[in-house]
Image (cartoon, rainbow, N blue to C red):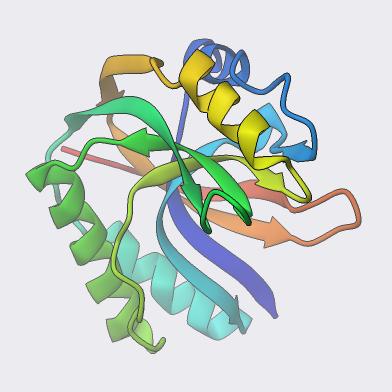
Length: 178
């Protein structure tokens, strides 16, 4: 069995800029900068044969390159019990279409449809016992982050390996756009 997801990775320069946000918040377990990405479709545990079918479905997709804008910070959970801090991704028709096409290819390969609505974001940290006031102070101080015109020229099939220090992601295959 192999644990998979499809996402968009970032180049080293953008990763370094995003990583500058990852400091100064107690109770935050920061995501390793090498693992920063935008998830397009979580797949989960599949056997090798299904993984191969998924690969073929993804390889057949044809979509044009486009640009993203990363902006603002947000939370999953409420301010009193937030569990995830994320960097926002502005919605665009091109991004939504790519995510829908990927979901369709993965579903057609034999997985269950994604039950959650696509909510584009880049996870920065997992939070545990982080004081709500500190979260708000952090968002007020760093929430102005904005990176426009992030070129998206490919998407990637990733393997996720769970470990004590968090998940590690390996790029299995890149699929060019255009």
